[in-house]
Image (cartoon, rainbow, N blue to C red; front, side, top):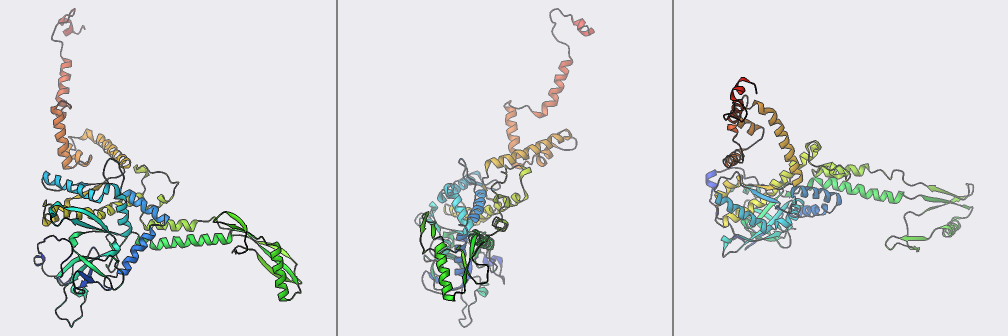
Length: 533
């Protein structure tokens, strides 16, 4: 194997620890298996193995689909839901609540995550990055570092066109040169190397060559959807190709039908008597030139001109009629009668939205505005929100890979430690503050109402801890934090200790039943005891 371009992390060899297997590891990123060999140096020829033309054509089709108005509106709904804009907060934040490391390490991880967002310029370009990833179905970045000072981490991130790069798994050729090389059978061999192949001219055709790039130097984030043969990644727009093509054809046919059938055309029956054919045709042309309207409307300039060079598909019909008929006659051919029907167009518009997992109600511009209350949330909106959550989870692979590179290069953790840490690192995308606040308030009101109903039974059928866990849904971390805050406020005198409330009430009741200790002016204590006062 030749030397790859870029940098690679040193990894421990664990192949022998897992034991041999007769099946190869499932490829989740559509890496194309090929046999080792080809051109010398830093170049390799994929041949037809990667089915490159199909993948390039698909990406071009996805980008063309995004220019259609209905598809663009649906894509905007998806991206706006996934990436919420806020002037105060950044679109995404890191959650280290379940990570069992020291606070110092957590602080450094948060700092490196902020550096990653700064390298992506995510605060300003979040919408464009997510939209590009959603349409293409994949996202590539070149992680540039300073070779002399790798401990400084990533210095720059450069976007790579997905039509020019492909991930490849290269397997070693068998020693027997007589037997043919089958990449599918070669996958069983443990001796393989993964890399990205990049071609500035694009990965198209059979003669392409490309530069081998180390996998650690490239950030690859894909949609998670693969074709049936798992040769290339599909975009979320793939299942909407048929629906969009049908909508386009329906709209085009509707325009043609309306243009051709909208006007009423006249039919002139010209009596030619017993004239021969040539004489009859000449007489018909003379009548046409005499009564025909020669004015033409130019749609480009808005002018009406008398130009005979313009031919219209909506001209009148001139038909000759022989002797014995009804003579010269003018009749009218009516236009289309169902020009106002748009049910078929609306059907395919809804079908397009369903194929993109967008609620059909968002297609209607005059639909009621949803403020987020439970009574107003439809089942389609709930399904749509779950779809957005899945998209965010898949898109978070971009942050995972970049953060891993930063932490390993700067020596904060090793690759083995990262494999254990990454499962406990979550990324929190902000939602629309107004909607989320309404939902939180509504949920809290329902919980407090239920808690008020169950409070008389506290200490009899339910414990206080049970009510806090089951009704208020407080976690262990919230438990400890709230208890600590309450102890602090009780010590400062801001709150009254709830445990002392019964004793205080009993003491106040006893004091109210006791007579005054001091003699008041004008009052005899004996009268007080006898009940005269």
